[in-house]
Length: 275
Ligand code: MF3
Ligand code: CO
Image (cartoon, rainbow, N blue to C red):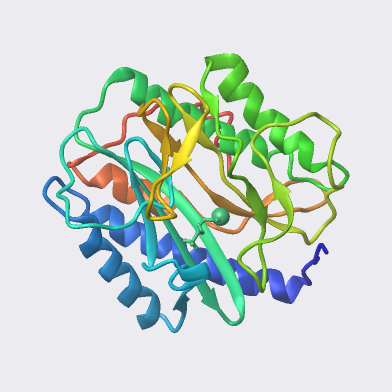
């Protein structure tokens, strides 16, 4: 069952998405070598509650933390822990909130200090693929058009592994609504996109093979070859002529640039990353 949102509901969802953006912005200011992801998770929980919202991941199907923090070869759903982050680590931070009855759910990948050129490229290309997918989130297109755009830019053009087991999704009163939004697929296939459909589009792209496995904790998803994986996620509302991005990387990227402990020189193609 696909739910289309009214204009009033879309504005509420924008508030939820933007609270996640604000939380990610604060986290971007805190990132540095030596910090532990568990302390970030504690901050995330209190920041969300201070803003009259609920951290939606906590207890979702038994998930035991406020956020998912996925380092290096962890694709998604990493548990925050006591290990110190170090120079050269890349870290995906995925946060969900419920505010006014609606979910926000988005994510950003940061790099601590200097990282190797292949990983710089993987991060740049995954973010570009997210925006290329978003550009297809207009009424009249199909879910497969988003999927195809992401797969073309990552797998076909760069030979990266596109994770098959995990997908983007509809978003609303539930964290995961129909339709599923894979990061691979055929043009013109899948559900038709109509105005008011809100999607969480989230490419999960591996430097090496596409295969992943889940650890014994039941959550942590890692690449089979232990090469690096990158994850970006935006909340997007389908519109008639242009996708409406409800979440906002603007303040997150500003904080990333201003933090000397974070790498930020990606030179992502401006033509692609237009908001
Ligand atoms: N952003 C992820 C998703 O869309 C995280 C949810 S898993 C959770 O599925 F358990 F942490 F909630
Ligand atoms: Co999601």
